[in-house]
Length: 290
Image (cartoon, rainbow, N blue to C red):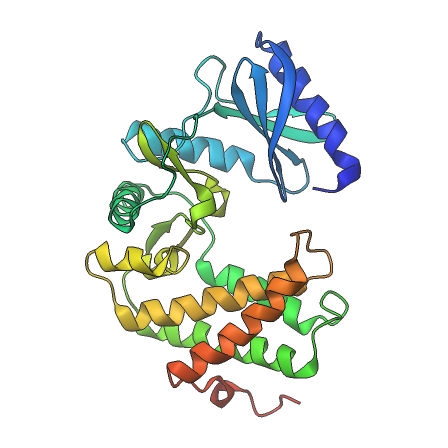
């Protein structure tokens, strides 16, 4: 979130919680990205705040309710208030249960895989309109193609990302495997270690696709404990996901600390992965490409 917006976002969360009868005297910023995640004290509530124009909070709240009701390992909404999306001063605020982290915080690959498998099992039972994973790939392709939005990309790196996104999107799509509702980004940053076990957060990234797309976001050891994985598809999804998040790092509006450094490192990883897996993405270029 833009630094200039943070004080207003914090104030919106505090006033929203106070108006609902929760006592708020202090705020701890837990995470600052496209939205602000706050711990409100002493009521001990987790608040997520995002600009009205850039959020899908209502979808996330409704999905979290349905998944929690079916016993899926997801973070719960704050039970002391109605499960609504609250709007204040140009922001939307949602209130969630705060989970005290437990030690040790290291997550075993087997536990990670089990929790993700349980989440996927619950998601298979839901029929909700969600984007397809290729929509995210297309957004990355548009960023790569737009030099105004990615001005620092060299021609060679722009070509690498464009070829990789286009080729792997096609290859994965042509496999025609089973698809279902996915978390979308179940990386370690979206997994909480709690007394209730592992819980997934940030459901706004949900999409449809093969489970291998979700597994591509998790540590490599996790897939060894997840049943029925198509290893070839998983390798392709890992490179595709890496290409997508690398593209985000070159967006001139990216606010991730050290984002440009990561983008440079990940370009090298993409080249190494393509060489290691013998993938020729240049073969997928159209005849009119310059």
